Image (cartoon, rainbow, N blue to C red; front, side, top):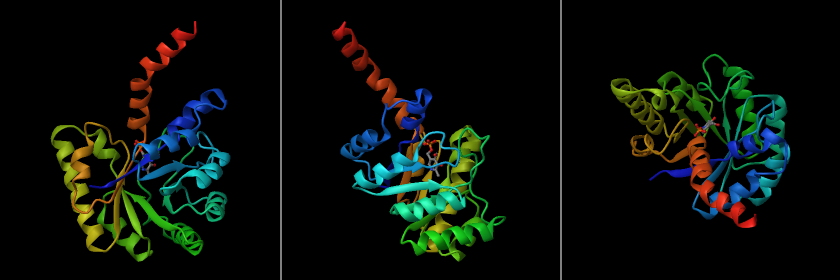
Length: 235
Ligand code: PXP
């Protein structure tokens, strides 16, 4: 069974909608760990649209399982990562106009920048994972760059339906085999939810799944009834 990394970015998204103090992603991380999360994942974006520097600092102090920081190859963010020292850094592509991370990191086209980021992070003692599409060329290059892990982008699988979904799953299975045969740790994530997670979780040698939006979305709905009752009791 793979380990579960809970991505808490969208707790911060809700907070930033009002630029207030709640809900606090630090509190969310404590609860996720109490419920059995194996790691806490967060993405410090250059535009700081959800997670803030203060969140990362406090999470570094409070997370007791494993802190997995998603980040772009930005010099500034890499510098922050090297100072903060999460156990794992996952390099992702980042574009300001995107709603969420839209595709895997193109290691083939950005080899020099990625290699430099990997070197800086590893020199700080941080294990590096590359978030890439299920493409054997990208996986081979990840191996050549000396990273510890790859995270397969499951976004296309999550969006696909019917025969297309079966094809996307087959690509993930094949890519997973390439990665683990090369001795890379195998992770996956993006768009996974309560309906589509099982086939990905059962891919051979899958070690870690990072899941955010579906868990936070469900938390809002399963918690709403109690929250309304508590407010009614106050009136
Ligand atoms: N893995 C990576 C590399 C991501 O960028 C994200 C989104 O921040 C996730 C996993 C989680 O995706 P989702 O929120 O769709 O579960």
